[in-house]
Length: 473
Length: 161
Image (cartoon, rainbow over all chains, first blue to last red; front, side):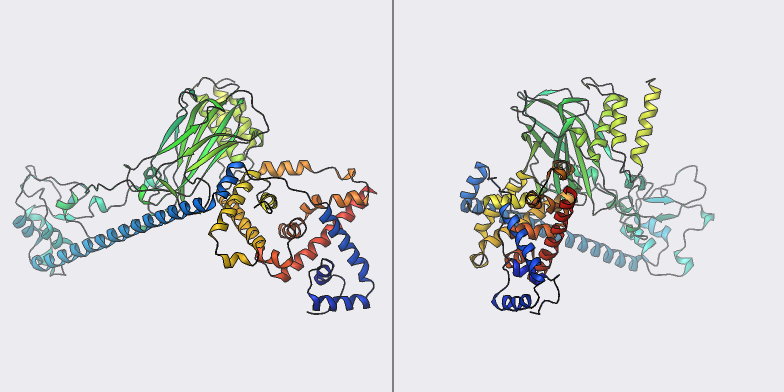
């Protein structure tokens, strides 16, 4: 350790706090003896340290009894957690193995098709397209899809010849697309004079990129605004989540420019339906926010948010649906109604979709305004978090905690979305909307418009003003 | 458990912007993890181990919150509102009582080392282990933090005079 050079030295503070070992202390002590001006500095540090020690705020907070019990029953609980974690790990491993097997199978199938096409092309390459078509496909009544075959004959014959709509087999397609280069007269289509259609193979529909318009899907907003449900009679309500509906579309440039055509008789068939069981729904995170309802402050507004990865097995089929179950505690909630549900598709594959649901609750009886109440819980059977964390909490359930937050103190996002929901209620002329009117919607929207990165909030404010004027208000 | 329960809850609550319920959850989790820990790792200093795990879990929760861009503005607001008027502090002794309140004027890492030292009685070595800093860094943060705190107190004293 070096000798302190001046009064502004961490070692002097450490000396005053007794944090130096014997050797260091001796060095600093000797230096202080030589520099008496350091003593007032040390005294001040000691005095401040003493004050901090003596005036330290005492903490009397304890764990809740059920938490204490959980800790005291720790070994048993830990064994359960370890078992649960290993089960989840095994399931994940099995899923990964299945995925790998499926990839290998796809690769093998693609290789086999390519090889088959190559062999077929080698055998039939010497024939002209028309000859091959006529020789191999004498089925006049088979229909073809427009996307699969384009008929390039200039004037369509008045009476359709039997070869006008042929069903191409593997050799026919192979002759078009994959055969080695042949002398022009042999591979060229039938001359126009013969007025026979030229069959041109194009990408099969299954291989075409999906419509671009769907890649910029707008947020799906489903307004329900159900009537109030008595929480005592029916405490459980359920929402359906379909991750496939919020699955992002692949980027445009990811589509291959050239694709080997599938045999048409295969491409025309519907995709094989797999009787796979419903996969686990992966979720990044979820959250419940509660605040007083702006149009009726005796009510509560609950906003549930889920982040669901866009690219996951559960999003591959629209058959996979998951029930988001919301159970309200009748001790605290007299009645409830679902105001709206919204799902936002992410822009990219690696981003997460956001599912949001709004509930309006009527609290049960007179509550202590400062206490935190547990209004209910949210469960999502068949779901699993993407981040495996070993916690004592029940990872499959989320508590809806009401911390008596006033809506004016809520976050701007919460306020803006409340304005959206309120505007929806107004437009549809819903009942039981308390003091909700255009002015309140405007107030909510304007209050939340300070952080408007996309400009959508100001657009919404303008829209509400127009609606207000149109309504003659 | 009795020994560290309250202190850990207070520590976690400071990291979680005063959210006591989540602080309790974190502390419960910390105690449960103690069962899973290898005895060799804990044997050196149970206290430092508990604080380290508690801190990491609290930061996990904060990270999750920031991923969803949820911020607890209410808590921040209530904190700002709860600060007493400086004019109420008349003499030096009262000013020293206010040292813990003035701590909020320091940076977060300075606050943390000072809290761990004076509120939780941790040594420099323990603090270094908990925060992942070197002992030298801890000493520097403590020195700068206490110096800044003295400046703030002097400023308050000058205002009240």
